[in-house]
Amino acid sequence: MAQLYFKYGAMGSSKTANALMARFNYEERGQKTLLVKPRLDTRDGDHMVHSRIGLEHPCIYFDEMREMKEDTLQEYACIIIDEAQFLTREEVYYLVHLVDDCRIPVICYGLRADFKGELFPGSYHLLVLADKLEEVKTICWCGKKAAFNARFDAQGRVVKEGAQVVLGANDKYIGLCRRHWISGDLGPDFDIHKI
Image 1 (tube, rainbow, N blue to C red):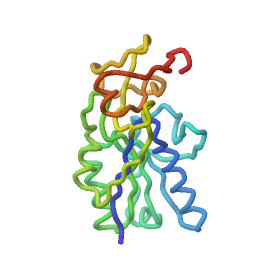
Image 2 (image 1 turned 90 degrees about the horizontal axis):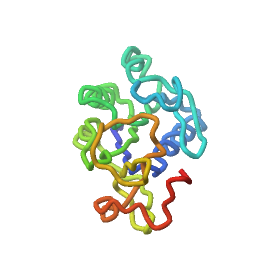
Image 3 (image 1 turned 60 degrees about the horizontal axis):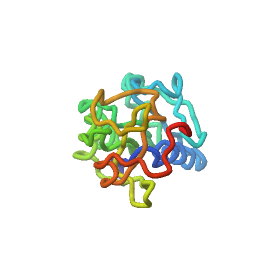
Image 4 (image 1 turned 135 degrees about the horizontal axis):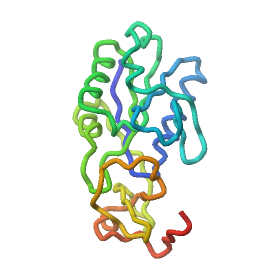
């Protein structure tokens, strides 16, 4: 039975690596997958998904998938979406259609909330509509679970104002626990020059 999955986590929780491993596992068993990301995400190059640990694989953009015929999409055992927080409400409902009407499993990976603690539109609708929710965990510098994304400036200060989306700025974010996100504490060993 096809389901819509949303696997979310803070920055640095290996969401993209998990997406690429899921793709590999399907393909290793002879099942075709379709790796997709929103066109907005251009930091890894054209039509490419790249994880921080060096895994990468070609992908198509969400709008390109939308242009494909449903018969063609049904050839895939699974559709895997990276950076799902950038999806729109309408795009999430399209994924629901693929799952419910076309019976294609869809696994989405993305951030739950931004650096201000506000839900991304895609994440909001996935949290509401997904059949299965799973947190991809990572830890804060203190050892507690990191569930919040902190953006910091050139001086290493946590900022909570600015545009929700800043592409290509992975080196300006870090996952923190709630306590340290609220206080803006990047830890005693944080060194802006090592980023």
